[in-house]
Image 1: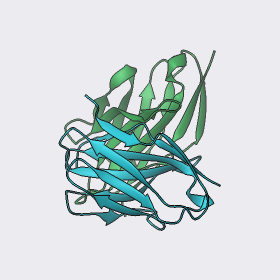
Image 2 (image 1 turned 90 degrees about the horizontal axis):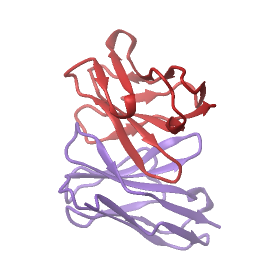
Image 3 (image 1 turned 90 degrees about the vertical axis):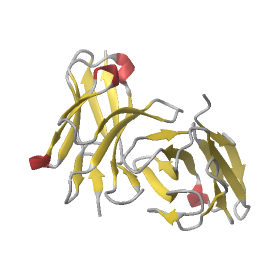
Amino acid sequence: NAGVTQTPKFQVLKTGQSMTLQCAQDMNHNSMYWYRQDPGMGLRLIYYSASEGTTDKGEVPNGYNVSRLNKREFSLRLESAAPSQTSVYFCASRRDKNTEAFFGQGTRLTVV
Amino acid sequence: AQSVTQLGSHVSVSEGALVLLRCNYSSSVPPYLFWYVQYPNQGLQLLLKYTSAATLVKGINGFEAEFKKSETSFHLTKPSAHMSDAAEYFCAVSVSGTYKYIFGTGTRLKVLA
């Protein structure tokens, strides 16, 4: 039972570089989410996908893009990384709109 | 817009004392509410959830929460704190009619020996 798997676990980028964070879930969940966690600010929603083929902006979408590749996978892309994007990123999935979320272990990203 | 507010970014209690972590919601309709715990360098795991079936909800590790519509609150309690309860706790709300899922800013619980 892998649950939600995120890769990579750690990454250091230089300002202006691009990268994609990968997330996959094996629970046949419909909706998937990307959050960033910063000290004192809790988890802030970047983007979410209610179902395969749909994506919506969350609270802090600027500087990010997402792709819901299929039901299992939801990727987050930083086109031109900035130091303000230094954070811990979490992917999550839910079966439907009123159920709990299951989280990956997080990706710690540092932009220098 | 629906949201949750957690009062107190840091709470300290003595081992064996009552734990009370506060969460207030803003919603015109009864929301679906959740509490999660995060241990250092880990993801979040569900403690309990309110889905309108009962106002007092029991969760894992001896935690419970009571939904109070009149106070728009869903505070998390545990009668007797244990050292292993030291962690960060998050309240979350499922935004009615959407798939949006919003978290509070978190409360870090410290348990003193």
